[in-house]
Image (cartoon, rainbow over all chains, first blue to last red; front, side, top):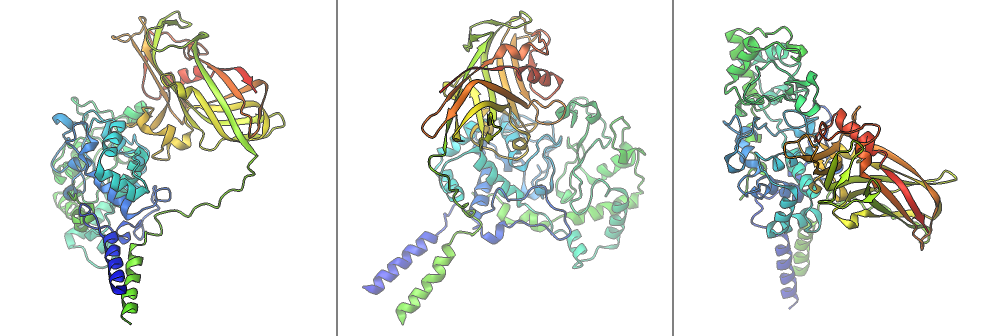
Length: 344
Length: 260
């Protein structure tokens, strides 16, 4: 009898530990740590007001892949931010919103967000936690109201459970939703590329990659600053103005003519996978990007000071070498990490 | 022996179920406040236009420029309440954020909490949301972005919002839409208001005074910046125009009475 009691209490313990089959892979404490890779600067965002937990991360991931965030329940964040493309929209200049509507800016990659000092191509959003409100409410993206999102999630059994686990009760608020999403997106660290391994001394560049790196440091790294490969400043990089889009860039936010056509300098990590390139996705290849800086820069009053000479001179071989180097920024571990993948 | 073995099996299982240490922050030590120290302070807000009670919908009013208009929406943030005594003591309410919404009668009655026993002679507060909460990520309660007072594309709270209709409006559909925001720089719309009471408001744990305020929407369009709806009818971003309206509505409040 005594044995039976012990065994039955064991069964109970095992049951209490069992994991909801929907939540897979199982996220452990080790999976959701704040990381500052060696040599990297202090991030702009840390989790001091948003304690990282496996349940918070798991909720954030579910929300990231949740189509209920859109007005017709058809589109999730993950629809346009795809892992194989470092969470950019692979192959798309513009992304499809609800009803097939098209936006007018290229979906950016999501990686190392905690170091970003602003969000969106025009830097209009000032904090990682409120960033998702932009695409959720944009009429040509998810076209939903935040109050409808809260109502939909509140009536979902799945989310009652996920919010309870993450926050202690099943109340859905935008604050809880955004903090959970920041836990998920803020821990999408990419720092295991070949470049990183070379820096650590565990791998070596090929001759072409090394040559490309030397050229990169000399000609590109002022703006695309290591180790994040951006200083996150907003600049006019001399792209010709697309007369159909009439996108004024930063000036759309500030209404200052001195900010015309300025866009946020993107990180180049995983650039091999994040095309098409530029804020409007106009270039489909890295060669086209380099050619822009060699011979395509349009001089204007707001052109970045770093590009005032009007051209970065590169030979054909130098371009080949720079591209060979840029491909060492591909982080296969990040692109295939199952923690960040859609579950079901 | 076997029982001990089974029990020892249980121990790691129990530990494996233990929630992460970082899940819940340590509870703060409880503040010891004498039970009889703190009370409440009630604020009633009467939204008016030229001293006439504001009714949403078809009622028409006239601005100083003699444009006629009606009002569909009036909402504004009333935040960072401070109460002052004649002797110079100041009480600052913690988490002091209220969204006043003419369409929601409950929102016109504010209950300031945790007010120490004292005789108060003046109040100060902000129209709008302080810059810190504009740059600190996801907020909740009165600051929940789902309440429609938050710009998602250019982060920041809409401090005050008025929408309506005027035959003089320069808009094709004759609508008025003033969404006033901006928390930094020369066009900041954050306005601090100081009002002195005609008689002291006496707070005790068992006695709650009532401050009745008047907020006159006509002020938004009057002084120092006279507004013609023909030329100014729609604002939805931070600019010198939004600042002009904020400079005007900084004058909209006055004290009707303090009742003990």
